[in-house]
Image (cartoon, rainbow over all chains, first blue to last red; front, side):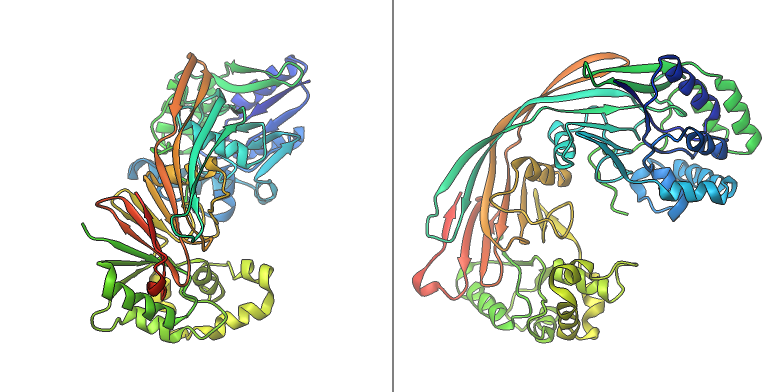
Length: 273
Length: 236
């Protein structure tokens, strides 16, 4: 059975409509959403309501959490003070726009979803704010999946779709313990399991170099993964951003498919908050 | 180069602290004393030890202190951790233990306790009560090497000194590797990574403590009060 995984919708209604249409066209009826329904984009209520209307199982993203609980990310979320100010503006605007009902929905979202050995999170099993970038330390990446008791971890947050398989891993250690004088050391080696991280990219704010929305389709029968790109009416969203009074740079980013703000410099950093 | 003494888990025991200070003064050629948390506990009144840590006697090493699990629980219960309370203690040992902990420390010490840090980075070493993940993380000889490597990687250090388990141990990561394959919209890339040579050292608790010489990278696991039947042993 094939299932689709979407993430980081960021209040971009046109992109979400296009992605859902693409999923429907393939006859896929199991969809999982990895959060960040709101933030940056101009249609937070419309996007939340579409997810609710379609009854798509969703876990909570960092923006969804912050809108409910107040801004509480540490400085790691922003590479510059300018980016941080823009992020705060978007936060304030979104909080004002969202209906109480939709806020309550965001507050009700779980941190993670699990289906057998598949785990779905926004950032990492540790935190909605942690970035699992494709080039992060391979052992640290494997630890995130293994410690969470999963074979495959679906995540988002980076806005960069990828599939990463971690295999043929081993660690040798020399252990010395006890209080006896000259305590002996013991050598041992563990073989690490094969694990996989699948990042769904972003529906509403792609950062992979072009303007297409991305998501992934995982076929459980063949265990294959397809990264899907979907075109949508980018200008419609860009116009709405400008008309809503959000920072115009958010529209510029969408038109170019990349952006330098709101990206952690250190992928292994765990937000302490 | 200066040698370090690393102690933890005093749980209010001033006598043990004095015994270690005396031993360091007489024999160990140590000039830095790190106290990796758990200076308090519910079993005895901790005020005398807390006062001594804040005001060392003449000739004693000035202790560099971190907060540990017990301090974290007390700080939480006293309202220093936002909305969190001593839930972990309450869950594991019950309300009686929470009350005993509150009774064991005079509120006048809370300001000093609240100023204690989570960890120190010295040279290429992390000095922590537990690990870089949380103050509860108990690392020991049976911990998964993958987890140990993760805790070292998070801090970007070559050695992690930890106290939470109360055990004295050394785990060296000596070899191994991993392969990974990344596929994205630009194509497919293959990566190989080796295990870096790093180490986790459990320093012990109470009378059991550790001496580290950064100049020679030599460790000694010691037990205070056992000089007559020297139990120290080192390894480079």
